[in-house]
Length: 385
Length: 249
Image (cartoon, rainbow over all chains, first blue to last red; front, side, top):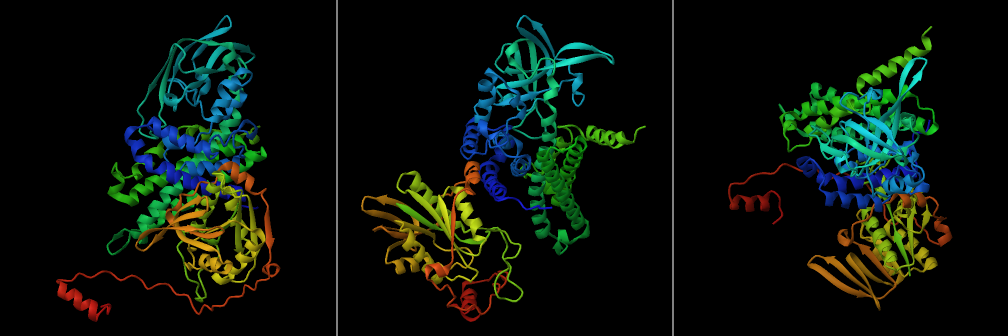
């Protein structure tokens, strides 16, 4: 097997590494304090990302995107993931679900998203529906050529800084031999549509990439704003679902590399009882485990990304990668806290931030429990008689 | 006007340098290599001249082993138009590099040659000056500002006493200092284009230059470990130590 990166991949990683360190790192403390990126700064960083071709690297080249394959994207995600998410999202990677846009939607939503002129958020989860996405209750009721939508969306990341919402609703019920089944419809909804209220929520992590509640009260949406087909909402979701899990893993690996470097540097130089604390086995073994798990997660991510490009990635593999990488970053940052000791608790020192930010990785893109459930089911499936 | 930029493949500035066990040099196996940072500044300056309409073509030249192609590709990914590799496995010393570069320049006839003021591996700081002498061209070394004027160039140089501005006639050789510019990021479109740009590979023989080293390296040693500082009680003691222990006054 050839693990060598191509020239293009190496150059992109080098360029992104410098971009992230130069343009994002210096603002992390500010974003943490303000719980957001000041709009002027956000616009400036986004412009630089666009000018360098780092924006929409995940979108097809013929539409003006970077046209990168999944493997190269995972390398990019690793570099971007080193910075705080509030800043990282400014190197925009618009969701590929937008490729389902048709007719006027292409010029209104897809192309401006690739050019960095418009930004979307993805609204699925609700107070009573998370991993059990089919439990959503936000209703879309037909009214002539329009739909009237009512409901509440919860924990919608970046809705506060988006200008349109990819909204998932229930638009009806069909009778099947196994009983009634909900029909789902996805809409492109401009945030300034009457009846839409977005309320930011206070989260302990990923400041600047904040969760929001979206209240929808008698929101009128024309039929032309349906993304994909009416009643077939979730059928367009599987491809990006797996991609999301692999990219989350890449993100965790990137963050892990950053924290690992800081921790190793500290353990090699902080002295206690006359020697470096890394030379005490209790600390040295922690470092060894951190580095080994990090390496494992990295290899799993590369393998899954490569399989995505071959079209052979399975659901089980994507879940394995996700659950391992997200639990790895939690253990790694927790060990880093322990090695940095009292200093790690201080808010003006970044280790606690990596630790807080790591917590959500085991929840979004599917909880650890859901992923284990998927893996277990797929293990058992071929053996069931 | 063509601009020729010399780019050297060196150990990456983030790498902690280790001396080889046999003391013949520094360890380069399994070590990250990249473009000499002063040369990156040179490439950036050349690209800015082209973007300002003052240069028509930017040519990146590297000398050394086949892997130096990667360094040229990096320059191409920044935006240079084409590359030339003078390929040899012989250890190249500054005079040999200057002679080889002169031969390339005689062929290419650029109006301006930009080099880093030194490479961060051996820190020789000789090639640019030697090249200018061999060519009989004007030189503006340690440039922190470069302006093209109607009758040549105006170069601001960083010298010991501050800044010195000199006027040069073209063609000229410029060596870059740190503050000349901030090199750009290689953009994704340029990275993707880099592989399609041509790199000519030439052997030193074809240029009629013998690159054999003139200087012999006897041994390479790590600098002595820094000793901890000492506190002195009085000025008198300090002077005494400087005179009798350190023997510097």
